[in-house]
Image 1 (tube, rainbow, N blue to C red):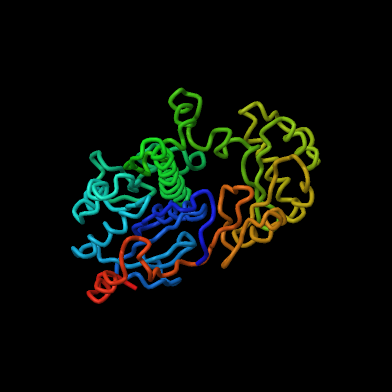
Image 2: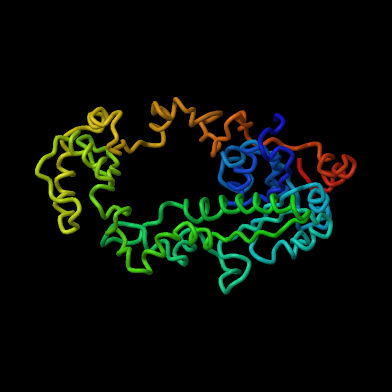
Amino acid sequence: MSTREGPLSGVKVLELAGLAPGPFAGMMLADHGAEVLRVDRARAAAVSTAGGGPGASTVMDRGKHTIGLDLKSPGGARAFKELAKHADVVIEVFRPGVAERLGIGPDDLHAVNPRLVYGRMTGWGQDGPLSATAGHDIDYIAISGVLSMLGRAGERPTPPVNILGDFAGGGLMLAYGVLLALLERERTGKGRVIDAAMVDGASILFAMFAQAARGGLWGPRGTNLLDTGAPMYDTYETADGQYMAVGALEPQFWAELVARMGLTDLPDRDDRAQWPALRARLEAAFRSRTRAEWESVFEGSDACVSPVLSMTEALEHPHNVARESYVGEGRQPRPAPRLLGVDLPDLSPPAPLLDLAPWGLPEAEARKLRDAGVLSP
């Protein structure tokens, strides 16, 4: 695995293995130069691209190193503390109190490394009546109020897979918090504990919409300008069973759409009472041609109309190809945001880290831990 380059070069991150949000935060840091060491359970440390357990390798583990450590053993906890002495960041993904019981909580690690940034990733947060209970993305966005706003009119709330809670509200917010704490450390010389809760992250992502809803400026789900309520912001089926996405909100873009489609005598788009009739006209028009034909009609235009591509089709779209949006083994999404002048980082699967001396664990001590089954490989 090559030397890490980027703005976070030299930053060492200990990532305790877990489900999506923690690894995603680690990936975001690794993508921009951080040296990330993923700490699995000792028996799960073998790097594998099969299966879905914590020990399996996914795109979110790219560019990292990995070891296995039995944190329930005294030797494993002591070893983790030694690693933390030489780390800048710890990403911890346990329920509240678990890290403390293992002897690797914030107080334990700050006692040996006051500069450590300790990032805690949970669904509910470190306190509150739900903090000790189980949950998933759908639960966190439900409690935040966000889920109530997602879906079509007259239908059940529809979760957008687990993007809002796990990834945007969870892992991405944790990575952001880590960067804030690292920046603050430059001024104060001290680390900080980050309480990254997915319920909080989902809430702030919807801050604008929540304010509008509470102020009476946003109606029930599926009836508004940006949630498929408006016919000029929706998807439409084509003759071949594919779909086109329409986002022609501004008058000039709408005029371009109407001209390109050859539509006349349309209902007034500014009259909400006319939206059902306008939608019916658009539906009939889009069904008259295939997706490829509509792509040709709107190519190079400002009508804000795009084909709805599958994940496989997206790999070959000319814009994505020109920008090299998918790179490396398995055509992975390119690290984002792009920092101009910084080379593409190492996107290879995680590699076992055999030499832990740079992390403060001498080879003799590592050998003893391996012989005792506490450390692997």
